[in-house]
Image 1 (cartoon, rainbow, N blue to C red):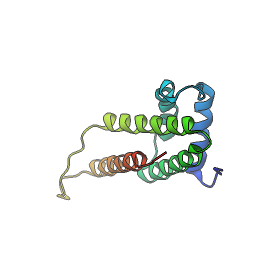
Image 2: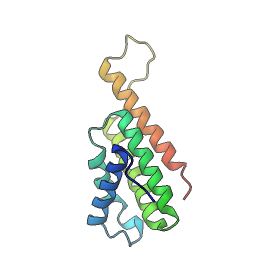
Image 3: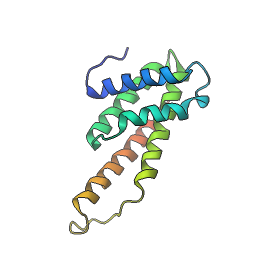
Image 4: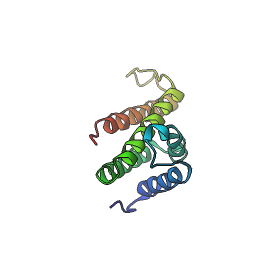
Length: 130
């Protein structure tokens, strides 16, 4: 099963424990996934783009490994992470797209990279077939 092999895996396991403490994960996941998204958000705050990528990868591993024995939990975590990532995109808003190096400030470039990472994580998540 899922082992703690890195900081990202540790964040995922802590988020899952938090979700299980505040949600009745035995219920249909549609009933608790929005609450679980709030729990996940707390573990994604203040991460760099690289840390977000690692953590979302660890979430995908967890979902894949859990899907066979507990598809309801796996789908709930997948839905909650999807909600969380979409909310992050909504919060950040539009980032200007311009390849002119002089156009971007360092902040804009960092934000654009972060938005790109969120979109990539969301695509990878949605591509999971469980």
